[in-house]
Length: 306
Length: 241
Image: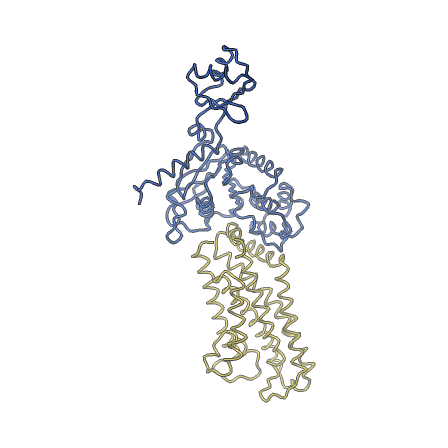
């Protein structure tokens, strides 16, 4: 199967460096979340991979070949860059037929991806009448058209309704399980956490992280235990006797940092403290990401880099 | 990647946006209507040229041809549509050649249908005033008219690729054709004869007296068009999409 290989990729627009010596690989069989704030270089990287923008230096290849050298590229790589790229006067179906014609893809395949993306009923309506969510679905339909091994989606859940978000999550999972290479950019943490197996994180054009999502979180967020009791005084006493510093939250629950559920549960039980709730407080991707970018900001603020 | 499927895709693009076949319909309507009106209007002008009068609808018709060429290209530069097109066809030269072919063939077909209709319509009004036209002159006028309108559509397409905007293209070309050629044209010297529209319209005249003849004039227009298309192809290859 095909992986995306980005090697020392650099892109400058005038004096602004949008992508800065970026090196990473996107492997098949898993969903890779492409994270970073707006302007971090995610979309630029995708355009460089697709050969649309010319890199200042470095290379981006798909299974070893530059995109521009692929014959019938839509059968290898499907991409959604901008949901507004479809011409408003064309019907959704005609929009896909135009793309299909360039690769001799049959109209039956066009109808199949329209059904798959839930656009069957509006296939013959003009794109102008589509909501943003429907345009996103059309863009995803275009990406799936050639049944490609590599799928790159730039902010696909923009404008999708809750049902659409669940749908895309299921779709991404299925595509990865079929062994395809899936790269999905987003600046929304909770949503990325719901579908990504692996993360590539950018900040100001540079690579900040390239790790499995679980490792990314565990390395940056300290584990904690969340506990609720009907006897706060007793709980506080027991915890401080054993060297734990618990913090009480306004809604009544306590957080015990650097602790494990097993330990806190045993302590409370031994001391006879009534426990209403006890849970491991796993770090979220959002916390991990903010910790990472905070560290990065400190690093960048030092004058060592002119 | 083969050329035929890319051409098919570009042809579908033109067919499926209603404004584009609409522009070709406007080409037919404007050319035939203005020729018919010119046929009915007086023939008292001392410089009266029956062939040019009969094909004078090509002057408004070329605005439609230019709009068609410019719009067919500028649709790509709206909301990054060209990225989708070039992701499907990364060979940019081939893509642009298919685009130009998809513009040229329908323009030529519609123009070659329009020109004889315009000529016959105008002759019905002109009556004996046009009886001196030889069949060869009329065939030359009709063929020349079809080629001229096609070249102007392609000229606009090339310019629109360089400017990446239909509005910018039309705001350059239409004032140029309406103002520069009509107003300055009659006053200025022989250089004006080499402007794309002036040179190409010689073929529409029965008689001509200048450095350029009907076919050499059309060749001058073709050079302008080739230059615009080459500039378009060059900028398409060089720039980020």
